[in-house]
Length: 124
Image 1 (cartoon, rainbow, N blue to C red):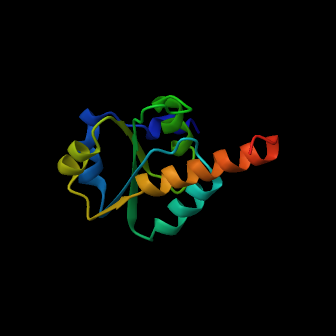
Image 2: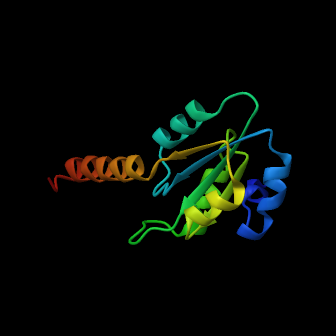
């Protein structure tokens, strides 16, 4: 299956809300996508949820927005992915049952990865 079909434009959000019984929206950067992200999304997924992930643009990202969206879409627990500049507009349009903000945790995950890489490379 080409999981890129799970990536939606902001113009196609109406069908997500119409199809979802219980809509859970997760907002984050996913730069880069790590095993910790996959575990967290699996934790957040509950039976009956439609799990939509908003992948936000971020200054100085390692990967382009589209690449990050494609990686998140490849995760089986994720129903839909929306690459977006403005997460607030998506939240307002979708009116999800629950919103989980992961931006701060994503930045911490990224910093931890940078620390580990530097330590292994002897760059302190």
